Image 1 (tube, rainbow, N blue to C red):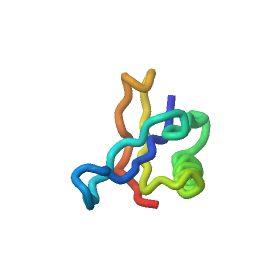
Image 2: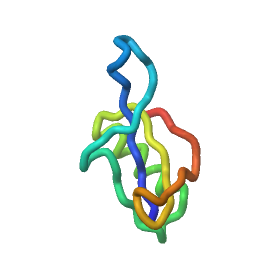
Image 3: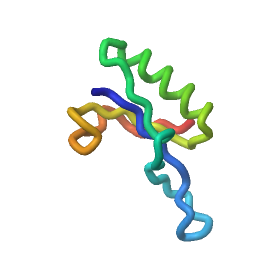
Length: 76
């Protein structure tokens, strides 16, 4: 399984610029594993802006709990 994890700004401490993983059903997008990596990056970047998040990162694994990142965090 390939998926995109989105990130938002931390609210603690106040004024922090640290990114944290977003949560909820809109915080990830499951991708079709047959797509090329450039296509996955295009979809991830577009969805990040569309959903109002600050950054995104691609992950690969058998499940959300058994996955690892396959790239760096990209800022929107």
